[in-house]
Length: 235
Image 1 (cartoon, rainbow, N blue to C red):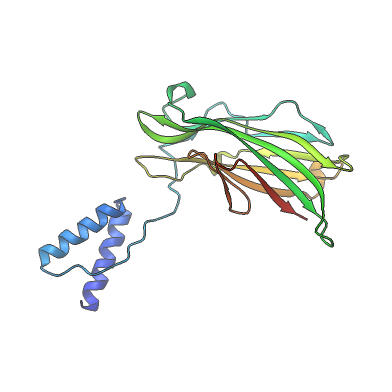
Image 2 (cartoon, rainbow, N blue to C red; image 1 turned 90 degrees about the horizontal axis):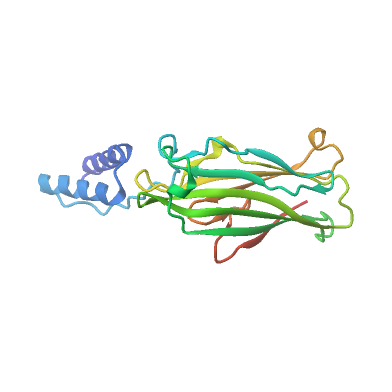
Protein backbone atom coordinates (compact mmCIF):
# COMPACT_ATOMS: atom_id res chain seq x y z
CA UNK A 1 0.00 0.00 0.00
CA UNK A 2 1.33 3.42 -1.00
CA UNK A 3 1.64 6.35 1.36
CA UNK A 4 -0.78 8.30 -0.82
CA UNK A 5 -3.44 5.61 -0.53
CA UNK A 6 -3.04 5.37 3.22
CA UNK A 7 -3.44 9.14 3.56
CA UNK A 8 -6.57 9.03 1.41
CA UNK A 9 -8.14 6.31 3.55
CA UNK A 10 -7.44 8.22 6.75
CA UNK A 11 -9.05 11.31 5.17
CA UNK A 12 -12.13 9.28 4.17
CA UNK A 13 -12.41 7.91 7.70
CA UNK A 14 -12.40 11.46 9.13
CA UNK A 15 -15.08 12.49 6.63
CA UNK A 16 -17.27 9.56 7.67
CA UNK A 17 -16.82 10.42 11.36
CA UNK A 18 -17.88 14.02 10.72
CA UNK A 19 -20.99 12.70 8.96
CA UNK A 20 -21.91 10.72 12.06
CA UNK A 21 -21.34 7.23 10.64
CA UNK A 22 -20.96 4.43 13.19
CA UNK A 23 -17.75 2.40 13.36
CA UNK A 24 -19.21 -0.57 11.43
CA UNK A 25 -20.65 1.72 8.75
CA UNK A 26 -17.29 3.49 8.33
CA UNK A 27 -15.44 0.23 7.93
CA UNK A 28 -18.03 -1.06 5.42
CA UNK A 29 -17.83 2.12 3.36
CA UNK A 30 -14.02 2.00 3.25
CA UNK A 31 -14.08 -1.66 2.20
CA UNK A 32 -16.60 -0.88 -0.55
CA UNK A 33 -14.49 1.99 -1.90
CA UNK A 34 -11.27 -0.01 -1.88
CA UNK A 35 -13.10 -2.95 -3.48
CA UNK A 36 -14.26 -0.76 -6.34
CA UNK A 37 -10.74 0.53 -6.90
CA UNK A 38 -9.39 -3.01 -6.95
CA UNK A 39 -7.06 -2.36 -4.00
CA UNK A 40 -6.98 -4.59 -0.94
CA UNK A 41 -8.10 -2.63 2.13
CA UNK A 42 -5.27 -2.01 4.62
CA UNK A 43 -5.40 -3.21 8.24
CA UNK A 44 -6.34 0.11 9.83
CA UNK A 45 -7.15 0.29 13.54
CA UNK A 46 -10.13 2.66 13.55
CA UNK A 47 -11.03 3.64 17.10
CA UNK A 48 -14.63 4.63 17.94
CA UNK A 49 -15.08 8.12 19.31
CA UNK A 50 -15.55 8.26 23.09
CA UNK A 51 -16.41 11.95 23.18
CA UNK A 52 -19.83 12.64 24.71
CA UNK A 53 -22.38 13.88 22.19
CA UNK A 54 -24.17 17.11 23.23
CA UNK A 55 -27.85 16.58 23.93
CA UNK A 56 -29.14 19.87 22.58
CA UNK A 57 -31.97 18.32 20.55
CA UNK A 58 -32.09 14.89 22.14
CA UNK A 59 -32.25 15.18 25.94
CA UNK A 60 -33.05 18.03 28.27
CA UNK A 61 -33.62 18.50 32.01
CA UNK A 62 -37.23 18.83 33.08
CA UNK A 63 -38.58 22.41 32.91
CA UNK A 64 -39.27 22.29 36.65
CA UNK A 65 -35.98 21.34 38.30
CA UNK A 66 -34.33 22.17 41.61
CA UNK A 67 -30.80 23.02 40.54
CA UNK A 68 -29.24 23.78 43.94
CA UNK A 69 -29.95 23.31 47.62
CA UNK A 70 -28.26 23.63 51.01
CA UNK A 71 -28.25 20.11 52.45
CA UNK A 72 -26.42 21.00 55.69
CA UNK A 73 -26.37 24.50 57.11
CA UNK A 74 -23.91 25.16 59.95
CA UNK A 75 -24.33 21.67 61.36
CA UNK A 76 -28.11 21.44 60.83
CA UNK A 77 -29.18 18.76 58.35
CA UNK A 78 -32.05 19.54 55.97
CA UNK A 79 -34.99 17.13 56.16
CA UNK A 80 -35.70 17.65 52.46
CA UNK A 81 -33.37 16.38 49.72
CA UNK A 82 -32.31 18.16 46.59
CA UNK A 83 -34.89 17.18 43.99
CA UNK A 84 -33.43 17.56 40.52
CA UNK A 85 -36.20 16.17 38.36
CA UNK A 86 -34.89 14.18 35.41
CA UNK A 87 -32.90 14.27 32.19
CA UNK A 88 -35.45 13.32 29.54
CA UNK A 89 -36.20 13.65 25.82
CA UNK A 90 -37.22 17.23 24.95
CA UNK A 91 -40.73 16.20 23.93
CA UNK A 92 -41.42 14.45 27.27
CA UNK A 93 -42.60 16.34 30.37
CA UNK A 94 -43.81 13.42 32.47
CA UNK A 95 -41.50 10.65 33.65
CA UNK A 96 -44.43 8.24 33.49
CA UNK A 97 -44.25 8.35 29.70
CA UNK A 98 -41.04 6.32 29.87
CA UNK A 99 -40.41 2.69 30.74
CA UNK A 100 -37.92 2.58 33.63
CA UNK A 101 -35.47 -0.16 34.49
CA UNK A 102 -35.20 0.46 38.24
CA UNK A 103 -34.52 2.93 41.06
CA UNK A 104 -31.11 2.97 42.74
CA UNK A 105 -29.66 4.45 45.94
CA UNK A 106 -25.96 5.22 46.26
CA UNK A 107 -24.26 6.03 49.55
CA UNK A 108 -21.08 8.07 49.22
CA UNK A 109 -18.90 9.01 52.20
CA UNK A 110 -16.81 12.19 52.07
CA UNK A 111 -13.85 11.34 54.31
CA UNK A 112 -11.39 13.93 55.56
CA UNK A 113 -7.86 12.75 56.31
CA UNK A 114 -5.38 14.30 58.69
CA UNK A 115 -2.59 15.38 56.28
CA UNK A 116 0.13 14.32 58.77
CA UNK A 117 -1.22 10.98 60.02
CA UNK A 118 -3.70 10.02 57.23
CA UNK A 119 -6.22 9.21 59.96
CA UNK A 120 -9.86 9.82 59.04
CA UNK A 121 -11.04 12.74 61.18
CA UNK A 122 -14.46 13.37 59.63
CA UNK A 123 -16.98 11.41 57.54
CA UNK A 124 -20.09 12.84 55.91
CA UNK A 125 -22.40 10.34 54.21
CA UNK A 126 -24.51 11.44 51.24
CA UNK A 127 -27.38 9.55 49.63
CA UNK A 128 -27.64 10.00 45.85
CA UNK A 129 -30.59 8.32 44.18
CA UNK A 130 -32.27 8.29 40.77
CA UNK A 131 -34.30 6.24 38.36
CA UNK A 132 -32.35 5.01 35.37
CA UNK A 133 -32.61 3.05 32.14
CA UNK A 134 -35.72 4.97 31.09
CA UNK A 135 -36.72 4.17 27.51
CA UNK A 136 -38.82 6.38 25.28
CA UNK A 137 -40.42 4.53 22.36
CA UNK A 138 -38.03 1.67 22.98
CA UNK A 139 -34.83 3.71 22.86
CA UNK A 140 -32.48 5.50 25.21
CA UNK A 141 -31.45 5.27 28.85
CA UNK A 142 -32.76 8.36 30.62
CA UNK A 143 -32.60 9.65 34.20
CA UNK A 144 -35.50 10.51 36.48
CA UNK A 145 -36.37 11.45 40.08
CA UNK A 146 -32.83 12.66 40.86
CA UNK A 147 -32.28 13.27 44.58
CA UNK A 148 -29.39 14.03 46.92
CA UNK A 149 -29.52 14.17 50.71
CA UNK A 150 -26.99 14.37 53.55
CA UNK A 151 -27.61 11.44 55.89
CA UNK A 152 -25.16 11.64 58.78
CA UNK A 153 -21.84 12.97 59.98
CA UNK A 154 -19.24 11.08 61.99
CA UNK A 155 -17.08 13.74 63.55
CA UNK A 156 -16.21 15.04 66.98
CA UNK A 157 -17.43 18.48 65.96
CA UNK A 158 -20.10 19.28 63.36
CA UNK A 159 -20.31 22.99 64.21
CA UNK A 160 -19.77 25.01 61.05
CA UNK A 161 -20.34 21.99 58.82
CA UNK A 162 -22.21 23.02 55.65
CA UNK A 163 -22.95 21.24 52.40
CA UNK A 164 -24.51 22.58 49.18
CA UNK A 165 -25.59 20.46 46.19
CA UNK A 166 -25.88 21.66 42.62
CA UNK A 167 -27.19 20.08 39.39
CA UNK A 168 -26.07 22.47 36.64
CA UNK A 169 -28.06 22.29 33.40
CA UNK A 170 -24.86 22.99 31.48
CA UNK A 171 -23.49 19.59 32.56
CA UNK A 172 -26.13 17.57 30.67
CA UNK A 173 -24.48 15.19 28.18
CA UNK A 174 -25.20 12.22 25.99
CA UNK A 175 -22.90 9.32 26.85
CA UNK A 176 -24.51 7.08 24.25
CA UNK A 177 -25.29 7.72 20.58
CA UNK A 178 -27.61 10.09 18.76
CA UNK A 179 -30.05 7.29 17.96
CA UNK A 180 -29.85 5.64 21.38
CA UNK A 181 -28.98 8.33 23.96
CA UNK A 182 -27.66 7.63 27.45
CA UNK A 183 -28.33 10.71 29.54
CA UNK A 184 -25.84 12.14 32.02
CA UNK A 185 -25.77 15.10 34.39
CA UNK A 186 -23.19 16.37 36.86
CA UNK A 187 -23.79 16.69 40.59
CA UNK A 188 -21.50 19.11 42.44
CA UNK A 189 -21.18 18.96 46.24
CA UNK A 190 -19.54 21.91 47.98
CA UNK A 191 -18.42 21.22 51.54
CA UNK A 192 -17.29 23.69 54.21
CA UNK A 193 -16.37 23.47 57.89
CA UNK A 194 -16.57 27.21 58.49
CA UNK A 195 -19.39 29.08 60.17
CA UNK A 196 -20.14 31.18 57.09
CA UNK A 197 -20.38 28.90 54.06
CA UNK A 198 -20.41 31.66 51.44
CA UNK A 199 -17.37 33.57 52.74
CA UNK A 200 -14.96 30.73 53.42
CA UNK A 201 -13.00 28.30 51.31
CA UNK A 202 -14.63 24.92 50.70
CA UNK A 203 -13.99 21.55 49.10
CA UNK A 204 -15.76 20.84 45.82
CA UNK A 205 -16.61 17.32 44.57
CA UNK A 206 -18.06 16.55 41.13
CA UNK A 207 -20.07 13.40 40.45
CA UNK A 208 -21.66 12.11 37.26
CA UNK A 209 -25.13 10.51 37.21
CA UNK A 210 -25.77 8.34 34.16
CA UNK A 211 -28.79 6.74 32.58
CA UNK A 212 -27.11 3.33 32.53
CA UNK A 213 -27.31 3.21 36.34
CA UNK A 214 -23.72 4.19 37.10
CA UNK A 215 -22.38 6.94 39.34
CA UNK A 216 -19.05 8.50 38.41
CA UNK A 217 -16.99 9.51 41.46
CA UNK A 218 -14.56 12.48 41.56
CA UNK A 219 -11.75 9.88 41.42
CA UNK A 220 -13.15 8.77 38.02
CA UNK A 221 -14.09 5.40 39.51
CA UNK A 222 -17.62 4.11 38.94
CA UNK A 223 -20.26 2.83 41.31
CA UNK A 224 -22.99 0.65 39.83
CA UNK A 225 -26.12 -1.26 40.93
CA UNK A 226 -23.73 -4.07 41.87
CA UNK A 227 -21.64 -1.72 44.06
CA UNK A 228 -23.72 1.08 45.57
CA UNK A 229 -21.39 2.49 48.22
CA UNK A 230 -18.05 4.24 47.98
CA UNK A 231 -15.76 6.80 49.55
CA UNK A 232 -14.17 10.07 48.49
CA UNK A 233 -11.02 11.12 50.37
CA UNK A 234 -9.72 14.63 50.87
CA UNK A 235 -7.52 16.63 53.25
